[in-house]
Amino acid sequence: MSFVLKYKSLEEEKEIPHENYTIKDVLNELELSAQTIVSKQNGELVIEDTVINDDDEIQLVQIIYGG
Image (cartoon, rainbow, N blue to C red; front, side, top):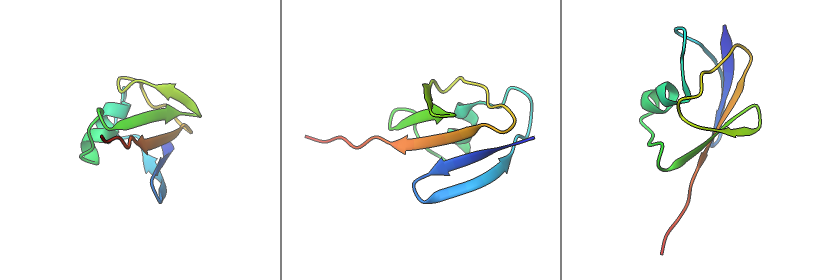
């Protein structure tokens, strides 16, 4: 089972290592903070506890903010 991960210029197919593998697991592996990333699963905004399924497309978008 695998999914497609898109982040900045990265686009790769990744294996789902275990059951109930979530967006949060991906963020931890990439050492990214959920506070600075918006996650999409198959084009829909999702929370970090969302479970990734076979053939999903996961897109991580960096939030840019400043003052």
